[in-house]
Structure formats: structure tokens, C-alpha cells
Image (cartoon, rainbow, N blue to C red; front, side, top):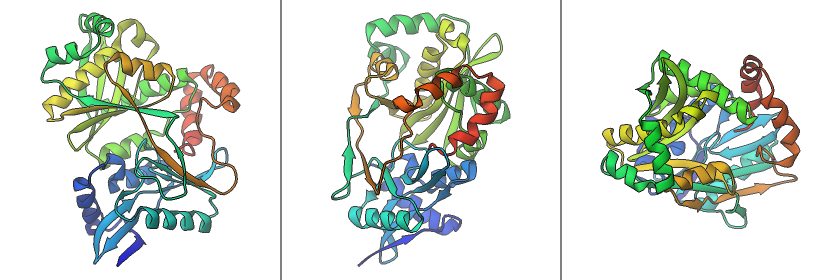
Amino acid sequence: MTEIRVADLRVAGEAARIDAFVQQAPGATPFHLTGWSRAVERGTGQKARYLVAERGGVPVGVLPLTAMRSPLFGKALVSAGFGVDGGVLGEGVDALAAAAWDMARAGGMGSVELRGGPAPEGWAVNDSSYLGFVRPLAADDEAELKAVPRKQRAELRKALALDLHIETGSGARDRAAHARVYGESVRNLGTPVFPRALFAAVLDELDADILTVRHEGRAVASVLNLYFGGTVYPYWGGGTQAARGLRANDAMYFALMRHARERGCTRFDFGRSKTGTGAAAFKKNWGFDGQPLRYASRHEGEARAVNPLNPKYALMVATWKRLPLWLANRAGPWISRGLG
């Protein structure tokens, strides 16, 4: 008989058993690891609610959830909170989803969002909003260049000819550079930056590091990367205003491909992008074919609206782009804690 229960992620032995299951389960992502749930809770204050399906005390299925609560964006149980994937992993899809729905209603949340995984019976499915971009890494730099379509390859060669310095690590210097660059990047896009505490917690809990591109000693592009199952996930990245002219983002991703190969990775997961956006076109130009991401949800009343492309946020986005950087970096984390 299968039992569904809420795991206590503070118990090291329990977390280790769950992670051992995740590591070998087909379709697993870093967002299924208990460390991701702990990092999100520690970095944002949004509570982790990790469901496990067990048979004879052995995990056979999991559903990592974050209880998102925001005065601006409403309340929902999200799998996985602040992740682009998640959902049910393993057996017990409908039972785990039903337990999540019961938990949401008991907690005053009228919505459950599952980002990835199989869709529970009867839940709404959206497979047209987002695309995921994944492909194998090539054998070496020259093969990697040849894997990039000709037009983008020419731009990449220009970037590689510039005097740009690459640094990787997870120490204080790396974290400070990433926070500065990422904060400016998302302000320029009109969205609030995530808390630095979230970045720090993810670096502490997961196999992760930061790759930064510097020009004349100044950080101009930086990305925080996750490593799981032979795949590198460039997750939170961006560039300053100067990065465009220096083609620093191109240099950054190419350097990350080399760095990931040296770490033993065989796949590059370029993350998700909204269908029809410039970000999706950028990844396609690198030789990545977008595949639809399948998200399932169940709602009681109106669903949360957290997509920055939603027309209702157009004025907010335009205003945010004009904020002084110091103000955007101070106010952003308070807002972004509720986006998840």
C-alpha cells in the first residue's frame, strides 16, 4: 500500500533517502532535490511542503512544493517554487496531486501549479506558453563552434577575439559580482531582482557555481549555474549595459559550455523561454530547438498571474526599467519573494 506524507527536510537521513530516489529517477531535475526546497525556504521565507509517496517506507514518488504567499500575486502551492521544472516524479501521480490540492485548500490557497512531470487526471494543462532548450554538449571547443548556426557563430568568434576574462567559483567575490550584474540586468528588463539570500542558499545547498565575464577588471556578465545528472543549467544570468557591445553574454555561454565539459557534463540546458520572445530566438540562434514545456494546474477561482508579459503588468514593467538601480535592488527582493 502506498502512503502519502509530508517529509521533514530538516532530518538529514530523511532528506538523504529522498535525494537518493531523485538521483536515480527518470525525468528528475535539480528542482526535485530536497536542497532546492530548503534553499528556497531559507532564501525567500516561502515555506517548503515536500510530499513523498512511500511503499514499505521506501520512496516511490515525490512532489516538491513551495507555499507561495504574496500580497501582490496571491497564494498558491507551486512545484517547484522558483524553479522552471518540478511536478510529480515517480509513482503516485494522482495521489500526490490530490494530497497537494487538499493541502492547498487547508492552507487557504486556491491554486496548485505543477511545472513539469505528468499531468494529474482532470487537471488543466498548458503546453503552449513556454519552450525548453536542451542539447548535447560537443566534444571540444571547435566542435561546439560548429554546432552553432553560421550567423551566430560569426558573432561568437567576434566575442572570443575580445579581451574578456572568465572567472568561475562560488566565493564572496563571485557572489558579489553575480548579484551586481544580475541586479542591473533584470532592472533593465523591468523585473524585480530575486533576493541575494536565495542565490547564496542555492550555492550552499546544491552543486552550483558562478561564471563571470570581466572586461578591464569589471564584471559585465555573470551566470549562476546548477549541475545535475550530467547536465549544466545556466539558471540566473545576465549582463550589464556594457555587455551588449562586448558580446559578453555570447562569451559567457561558450565559456560555460567548456567549463561544463571539464566538469564531466554531457548536456546543456539553456532553460525555458516564453514562446515567441527574443530570448527564445536567441537560444534558437545557438542551435537549440525549443520543445514545449507541459505545466499542469488546478484552481478554485482565478489563477495567479505572475507572467511579466501579462498586459496588466505593462505599466509596472515600464516604470521599473526607469528606477535608479539602487532603489530597484532594494525594493526588488521584497516583491520577487512572491513570484516563485
